[in-house]
Image 1 (cartoon, rainbow, N blue to C red):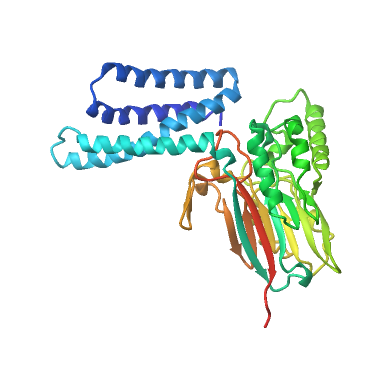
Image 2: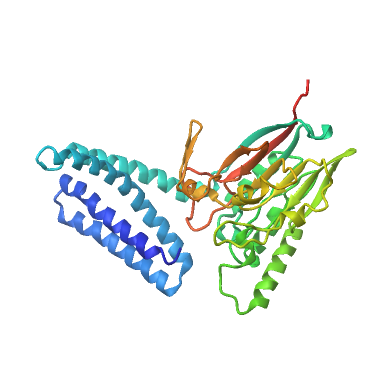
Length: 390
């Protein structure tokens, strides 16, 4: 990401130059022109300086500010481009005053939406519910409820009241089990220290279970040596215990209810492309008996297509996270879109293939962008139902 920032800044400035033609159409106030370009120059210069000097926290805030400027202007520039296409066939007359006004109204509206997402969207938690039917679900598990959390990224938290609001909402669901599918921290186990008491208050009668995500291994920062990174990972594993979660590291266990059970399998992170492939489904499921009902926790949804669907053991339900829905997009009237869809085939919500289900959680926390726009933080509640054979 660090290498891409100069290119992103350059693209933003190009869009800004084009958008400025609408401003010029509406006003000839030189002081407004100076303010417009002074803001751009200061923001672009500060971002590039922060990247060069390694001030990563400052970069995150500045990139959020740049997003506030870039997205409205990008959408407005598309409208201007459509106008310019018509101007080509009309002898290229001066730009329309009315179109320029419309562009600024659209940009202003988008700016306000983005401002809400960055200031309030990070804790605008949504409970999303799914009911899944299986003909081989053990009878005693008919109606069994799972609350899934993912991508907490505690290193990004600063608002204790906002985080507590989300945790209270988790407990309010009263689910039978809580499953967490990775990325407890951004990089360091110490990021979780202030939040241990709050997360330890999460309750579920059949337990709380977790797996690791790609950020939990500390692979994205410089360590003094390998031993320091190893110690950090061990400390993070201890944190899972302190908040009451049983961490599954390429292993499985049985959730027992009365005289029946379902198999819960947890793999370490496995991701496509340049992500590490620590996960080993073969090892994790080795002790699962034939005919068992299987639930898999695997942080990265790319693991589902690449490994899980064609595995010789039928995995009824896989729970993942990782994508965050890119923390930017929209979901309206059953339609959802985010730029992340061009990277991950399965990026948010429920998917089905070969009689198997995958649920991709949009994430509880945030990373990079200091908020969420349109793709809100999620608490997923999944109810398992036994399909009637009559």
